[in-house]
Length: 408
Image 1 (cartoon, rainbow, N blue to C red):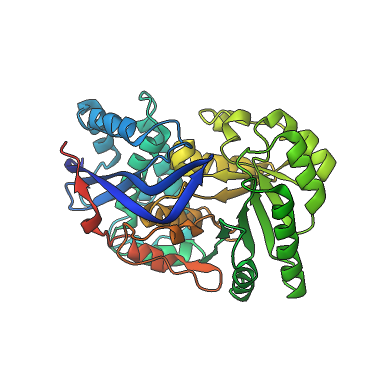
Image 2 (cartoon, rainbow, N blue to C red):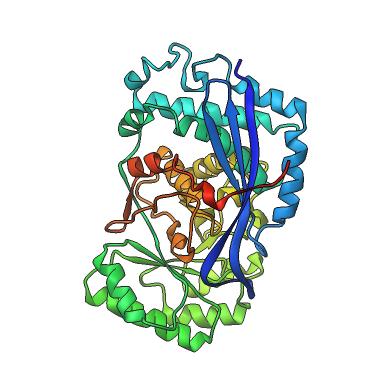
């Protein structure tokens, strides 16, 4: 059995290039915590815990207090150690007939790797069966333990056979006010297949004109495959959402995220506008995130996609379960982030690759908002895509200059 030989907790603050508005509140920085867990074979993994103010229910201080309690919980630490049964081997990468060792890892087929990875997610779920933790904290611990796999020497060869090399990215537009035409033409030239636009922040008439302008530019360049993902963050009343939806029409609109504060009005909004809806922060209003595996039955007709932010829904086991639920119901699972650092965003991208979400653009373009980041090398987006193997190699390069010890 492996032993936990290292458990460090760091804090970080990342200044934003410009103010971020979250539910009409202004943020100038992203702050959070980084846990570093090492085991006796010499590997150590990192997990980011950075709840977004005015979005997550828990704060960074709440998370810090809970991490300290978990670090001092000997029963919890022992449960972590039981996940890694045998020194020098990763039993979570083995099936009933095959134990994966350093010598045999290149022979592991992609399908077997995916199965073994899912088995490991089940072990992580067992880890938290009897412990109630904040969603961002659970996601951070799961990330740290899974990253003990991602930093393993030779994993790149397995990834080549298990995942698609390139994943599409959704381009983010935060501001509809300045340089819109130039930005849209740049997006079109870089072959992005999806564009996310924040709405509900200004005059409806001005936002409607901007959306129509964007549609026109896309259609003029014959890139009508590029879809618009609008995000209202539940800021509209029913009459405002209806006015906006009828004015822009459904053409080129993939969906609107959380158009209203009241989820009971979503069905009527869809009936009157024919614009599909995606659920983000309103997702818990429809689905019990603690009972995803028990869900069955028909989903609402309005529901086109679920926006899955691992640190908001409570970790990567729940992320995988929600992806499975969405696929079985004909709904798009869109992996995204809560304006996190490049470390967690890279991890989300790797997870998307393992889950074979190669045809659904990822919501990870928020990195452009940060002046500095936790990874020494930036995530490169080329022609609207990221390269998974490049992300895998860069995830080990932590920028320690941005970290400070928490003192526990």
